[in-house]
Length: 332
Image (cartoon, rainbow, N blue to C red; front, top):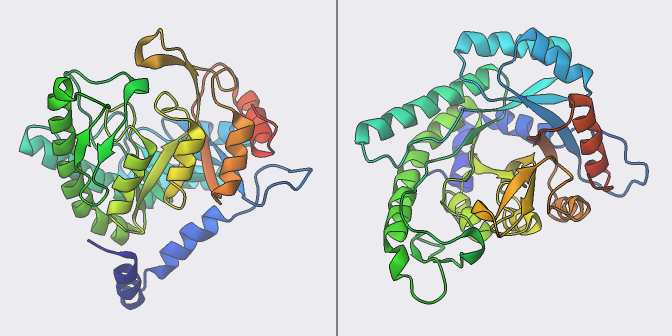
């Protein structure tokens, strides 16, 4: 496992510190929107999400006023280079990439676990080729057994070993299978990330872990403990401020992942305990997230960098205007 101290020692000899400086400079770039009141020192950059970086898409993103794009589709190295050229021509940045769906680091079949890790290695190389500084990784998922409703979770876990001990207060017997599957998934995730970390370092691309509706690490302190477990400059969190408000407010997630969240996604979720998953996704600004409060906590946690919007119901230009309002503290 490569610690921060170990990385600095290795990097000094290998000459890779320039890549880390580039990521830091990216995070501290100029603001993407005017702040007439000068209320915030943290600098946020708006990005759209798109399936591919063809010329038309890059031009569309730029024309809507976005400085960057995050790509979701799989691509070859040749395509990645082409997409990077398209983005540069349009004056935008491909700042991150993600694949569709979950990785299978905890699959019961060892060959499928191996194949999923190899796929992520390729994705890290592709990210480097298209100029991205991060790759989003959802390590796996569990399901098919009895588990608490989102508002019922009260996790007890060992922050050093990451072993999950209980998931609700009181009798946890009904959730024994969930706890066992969770601990197995964590074990396999640790193994996979340790194998991927040196590839991330080689490519100069940060591996960003996210728990996207996969029934794993569902509370802020647990997800943060998972990321901090690796103590690595190449393993960080990708925090979605709308995905998990059914488990805890967005502000709690931000505070828990202070210093380890490399990138942010924003979307909105309307809490409704009468519905499955305790609510439903809605267009940004129409849910339960207090975006004025979120902006203050972004400032509090010193996050500067990219924010990609994942929301429907509006045009690209309207999404940009919404992000401008959020960035200057006026809410969505």
